Image 1 (cartoon, rainbow, N blue to C red):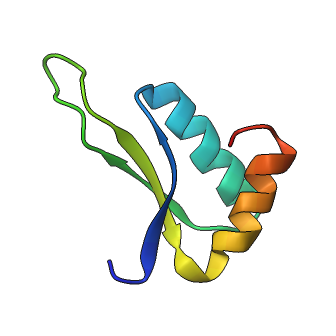
Image 2 (tube, rainbow, N blue to C red):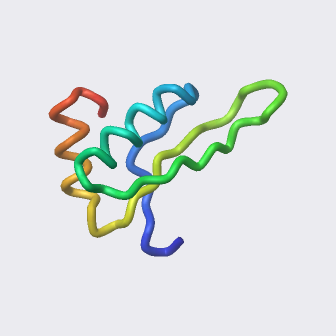
Length: 67
């Protein structure tokens, strides 16, 4: 995972899925890293991408107001 970085964090799973789908639609492989407690739903959900795509992903998120 050394080549991966966090591009987005949220506590809402649906929000993470929307961002992941948006990135993948634009050709950027993304994975959801769900670190929430399954019983109490506290913690974070991260979207991880390859570091090589970081600048492009930031531009995509900025253009859709998902910063």
